[in-house]
Image (tube, rainbow over all chains, first blue to last red):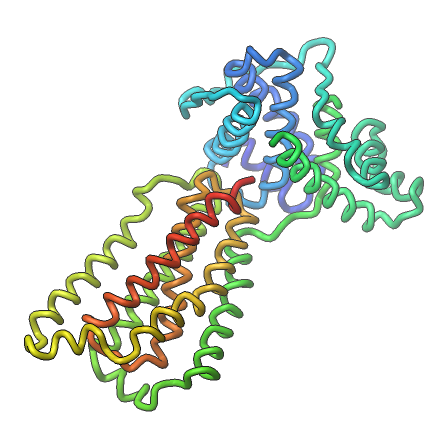
Length: 177
Length: 211
C-alpha cells in the first residue's frame, strides 16, 4: 500500500490526524487538476470547485476499499465532481484519465484564496450547525471546546458536524441547479 | 471559506458510514424475506413445490433468476465504488440471457407443435406480469438505496444493474408459487416483467443515484 493508502486506511478507522494529513496531501494535487482545466473560472472559482471535490471525497470515503489503489478511486470522484461542477456552471469539460498526475500539484499561493460558495452554503445551515462548522473550521476549535461553548456533549457535536457536512453537499446540489 | 478551514472541519468529522457490502446485505435480506412471505400469504406456495425440484426445467427457473440476482448484487458492489464503470461489466448478465434463450429454443423444439401455444400462454400470464414487478419493488429498492450511499459515477448503469438483479430476486420469490414449468412460458413472461422493471429502475437510477 502506498502512503496515500496508509493515511486513508488510518483515517477510515477513525484517526483524525492521519485524515487531516491525507486531505492536506491530496489538496494541492486536486487543485492542480481543477486549475489545469478551469482557468476560465479564475482562482477563486477553481477553489470553489476544489472544495466541492474535497467535500465529496469526505462524504464518500467509505467507498474506498482498504488495499485498493487510492489514485484511481480519488480520480474517479474528482472527475465526476469536476465535470458536474463545470456543467452546472454552464461549461462542458473533457477530463481524460491520463491528466491526473501528481506533477500538476498547485499550492494555494502565499495568500490562500478565499472561496465564496462554501461560506454561502454554511450560511444556509441552521444556526447551531453553522456555528459548529465555523468554530471547528475557521476558529480551529476542537470538538470538545465546541461542545463546551455550545453546551453540548462532544459526541453530540460530532454527530451534528457529520450531519452538517452532509447537508452542505445536499445544499450544494440544490443551490447550483 | 479557506480550503484549510474546510479541511479542519472535515478532519474533525470521524463518523464513518458503513461500507457498501454491509449496506446491501442489511437491506436485501429483509427485502427477500418479505417478498417470499408476501408470495406465501397472497398466493401460497405451489402444492408440489418439493416434487418440482425433480424437474430440471422447473429448477432452471430458480437457477436463472437467482443467478441474475447474485450478479446484480456483485455488480452493484463494483458500481458503488467511483472507479467502477463501463458497459463491459455487464457480460455476466448477457451470459445468463444467452442461456435463457438457449433454453427457450430447446423447449420450443422439445414441445410438440400442438402444445406450444398452450405452454407459451399458460394459465397465469396476467398474475405473473403483475406479481413479478410488485415483488421486485423491495429488492430493487434495497439495492438502489445501498448504491445511493455508495458513490457510483454511472447512475443509469447502476440503476440498470439494481433493476435486473432486484427483479431476478423478485421473480425467484414468485417461482415458489408459479406452476408454469415450461421455459416457453417463464423465459418469455418472467423475462418481459423483468425487462419492464429494469427499464423503470434505469430511469430512477439516472436521477436518484446522482450525488
